[in-house]
Image 1 (cartoon, helix red, strand yellow):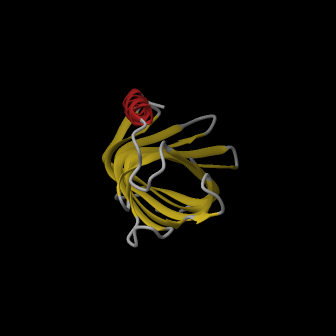
Image 2 (cartoon, one colour; image 1 turned 120 degrees about the vertical axis):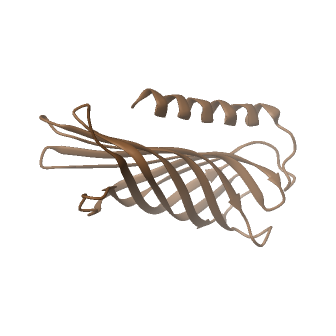
Image 3 (spheres, rainbow, N blue to C red; image 1 turned 180 degrees about the vertical axis):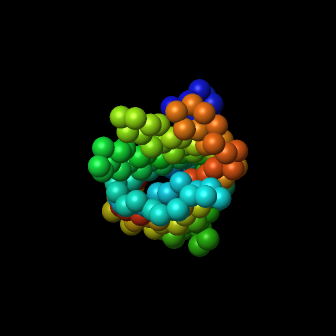
Length: 192
């Protein structure tokens, strides 16, 4: 992980920690931070003017921490990941972003999410290491299937997409217009 990506993720986690320490009542009457951990499948690809843009399917997941800021609106931070290995090549995506979840019906479980952060795609083998970091947008949707005040199952789908990042092969710059794309879906557990 490069220093800019690590610094950005650290700043995001510190911001959420500050939210958690405030512990003011949430708009829906409950206190505290909601954590969501999800695992599923995803497809990721390197994007650039000369890239094949073929997605590789593999395991993906998400982790988010958030709290209500108004009725029907939650804000926090989300980290998305994807990992694939085949034929001696390991590919991975790690992205982090502050996100906002909007609940259109207010009290219903359906939500839309959006955010902007930083993402990194790495591809490495014994001989080569290719990587790109870029400003990324996150968009998605899900539905909270609450079974108690503390727990909910959350089927979700999200897209992480970024462009305009410097792509490097073994440290040498290839292009300043590299990017990444990740589509993921799965089931998450949300708890307060």
